Image 1 (spheres, rainbow, N blue to C red):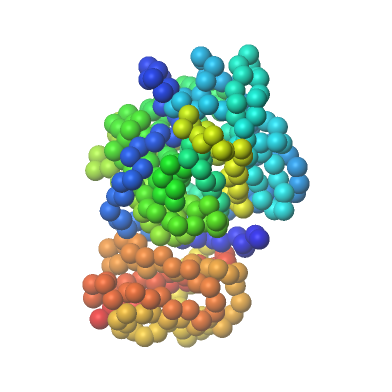
Image 2: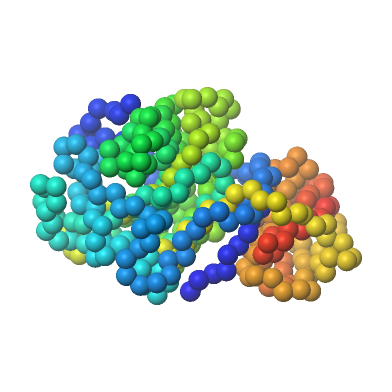
Length: 381
């Protein structure tokens, strides 16, 4: 079931034995969980600039997506992946308001090579600099499955990638930059990871973090990236699990000052179980937001919004006397402008709980209610 649109404040390497990590997500210590660090951005990403809601039936919208099917030199995908990527509706299709990438066991010959699995790899025909990416998805399960939601620099020199075919290929990987919004390995079921690949750290990169979510293959979750000029913040269902904010930003640590494009793919690893026949990576929507010009209205007696109590201790509640798209979002910032929490607003009367750990002081509460933004200062005892 679709959820309403939300307008939120929010040179190639040598081949290794398992194949080169040239712009593909890399399995990097998926059991490590980095310390959660809050975002310090107050950038408002409230303008929807590109999306796919996956309406319709049959083939995907090729005005928005490009099927990347060309095998790298040598006849196999990097990282030891053993599938062919195809442009067939057997492997990517629309149905019931969803888009499915289906990996399946079958003998398939293409480009002079026969493989025993097929899947799909999609490049967005849209590229952007800075913004908030939201992807609502449900992941496959099974040892050897490897779904990913990620980005690459539009300037990557990768034969067969969409933007390279359009003449933009000027920079090799990892100098073009890679942002892995979500990776999931079936041999570590329910652990999702985000990672950064740059010249300073790539392949088995040290720049990564993630967390366990018990229902990644049973329920849809929103995998999100907020990208500003200073940092990359990753979250699942608005809970931040990793922030990349290098102390020094230069060509080695921060190639993320230029356009990136989205990739969605479902890879098969050599460890795939003999019992695996097919699996589905299912998407409800993909949305990209950037800064807009929506004004912020102060919450006062005339706004139709009440926030109480002030000062607060453990909880902060609100009551809104007009209609707006649900769910909406609340964000709490400290006096330094650092984001200390994001919360879903599920009804006109809501409560933000578990705030007792916050230090006493002045905070700014922001509400994003459809295309309207509201803010008020509150005090923590």
